[in-house]
Length: 337
Ligand code: ATP
Ligand code: MG
Ligand code: FE
Image (cartoon, rainbow, N blue to C red; front, side):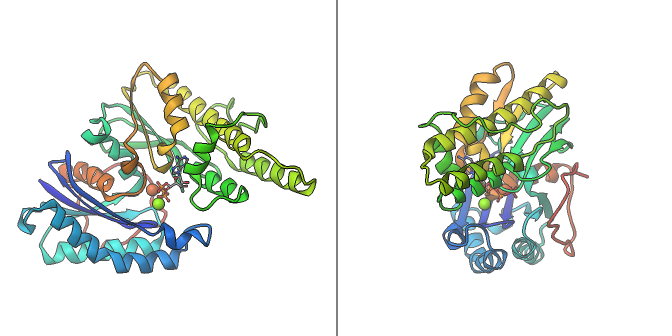
């Protein structure tokens, strides 16, 4: 079984080929970050244009690298949401055309299911043992998902406002860092002290909702007030204090979900923010009684490898879509049907 997968939901055009649900033969990623940097975030129109320019090249490069004849492919998979509509449509259109031309079944994949299923690959330390709990932390999402078995997803909580990655990028902007700033803040956080004691919203409340906008505002106010008084704050202490608050919240909610569902065998932590070193360190220290899977860095950020892994589960469930399928910018996280 060989699945060709396409991802174009945001600012990475990516194409992967997965063999037997296990082996990533290739995972070509063309990132557009350089084009969006100067705007401080992803500009949807620019993203769509870049995808259009890159998509054919990425498909050719992936097929070339995978080194398998076209006739060997079993299916084509594509991210159908959530994401930027124009960006999604480029991948969707390419996938449909490819499926039609080569008479292959088409699989529509949820981007967040992709982040989660990156953990199922042997390269990540998979397979996931079920039931599993997943903490998904990315640029647009922060959620806890209960996975009773492969493909059966139940979101038990999510952020009310900002996603974690978004909060990193917004405070990074106030610190004068370039977009995306998660990685730089993570590095600085290892060099300072937690002196500002930022709010840890909802940490003691029951349930699995998150909120990061209060933390973000507290951070921005602190920096602006200091600027008005011409005080100089140490960036590394700001970073350490911010990251400590974020990690306290993520760890507290994850641990209370694990306590409520003692049957859980695997904790999956995935999405772009799962690249965070501080998060990895605290998970290793504090969650020691079950299997914890955090994909390697190259499988945390957006990539088609993770989409191919989620697609393999859909392939086994014979969950295909038709050639008139749409893109769904705010697609819900739903069970494979
Ligand atoms: P979504 O997956 O929700 O649709 P997205 O695809 O834009 O959003 P990803 O590409 O999964 O998001 O993740 C990008 C985010 O991860 C950015 O906000 C970035 O700042 C953040 N990020 C990357 N590395 C780190 C890190 N080491 N620490 C914290 N955040 C990080
Ligand atoms: Mg991205
Ligand atoms: Fe993503």
